[in-house]
Length: 339
Image (cartoon, rainbow, N blue to C red):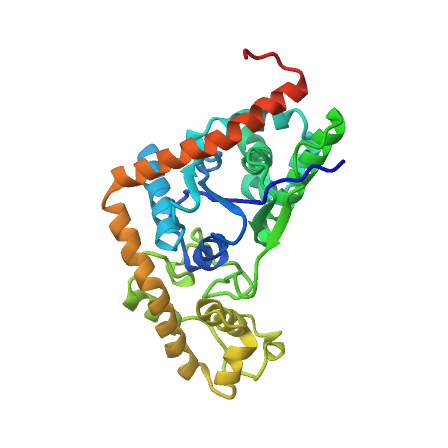
């Protein structure tokens, strides 16, 4: 008999600083949209993941609050969703250790993100960096999450989460953990660099001109869009015409994501026009969408004690769900505990 799991969405963002337009369109905006749509929504600032590489403690605290502020400024309502930071809920680390005994070392070494982050000197990387996907599986499965929004760079980790759940269920002869489904990103949510349309927009790019930060003011946003790399050709009437024009495609996708349209709808309006006309229109749309978020983030960050209170309350709500699931996991594995 197959267990029926309550619909529950989980996702998290690392507090590594410098959230961008890509984080907003690819994650934060979507997280807000999922609220109240028939599934419980649980959102986490994953500070335990952040420390897989060294973090300056005060900066980590600031960045954790800033990500929480960005969640709320983007429309995540802590009265509707559970919002907390990972390190306040001990079940994440506890379940991650249990999963370390289920996951195979070979699975970890195959993770492309580990290879990218560890580089050639992988022997000097932290054990936490290698075991990162096991902690991510624990983040998800501690809540029996049935769905997780994922982008291209996290699909492999979600597959591993599914593998860990399936192996645990098989090894112990249970149907305890759900095989979590991916919620694949929608149109235009993979935002690319403004300087190179083949690379994802990233806060780690050395060029600040490559990205729009959620803390940028209107002038900075307009200037970055004006200087974004494009080509000399006019815009076509459909997205098919942008197949080999990555920078042009990226800007059209950003416009579409900000306005809730698809790319073809945008191009129907701008067909035959050049970027001299399109860029100012995109800048106007971007400023209109992002200015309220930047303002709300600033307001939230002015009261760090209130952010801490919200995260603490969310941690209590999260632990109330995760606690019984982790205790039952230990029961299944044969561990004795006081009753």
